[in-house]
Length: 230
Image (cartoon, rainbow, N blue to C red):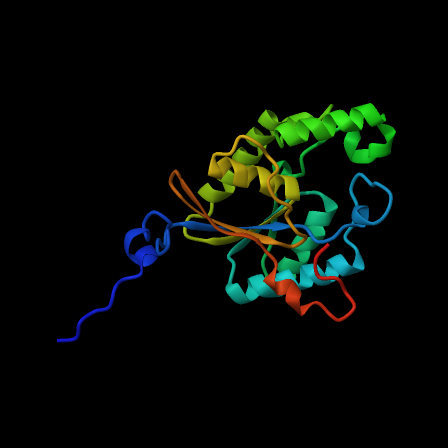
């Protein structure tokens, strides 16, 4: 008789809790868009992705194609839509555009921080330090309305994607806020999502499990001379 070794606790005790082998769970891959022109140049309301961003998008598209995805959803904003097109090309899949996956509207501070007085900028910094919330930005969409919008958009995708692997191409603020929601955090901003990072979530019924956060392993294949993370 062969004696079995000890079972690894994750696979034995937590398999059901973490949806580790549940075929009906939706697997969401939240992808932040590739680098956009707004990261380098003057502010634009809806900038395209840069040459570096095109390479980032190609690499994340190839990775998701290797892993296997069944559907692609995207924010309507140009930087997300262009990233989604690279993913769609690699996987030969159509794109479903979801209006409410667009980035949080942060008000005047988005266009030019220098247009605010030093006192206004200091007030914003202090408010963010006290609580990392979109409410700290004057004239913003606000944390409550943004959370409601994002939750409805992503939960709609979950319900339409039972048992499927789905890429959701969106924005840093969207990813930050949805992660905060599923972890039960009061604030909105706790990490910096890198361009084309993958944040993986499994969802079934009322359960949401964070599997990976801010994964950019695919950017290790960036050509020499191109900065992988921006």
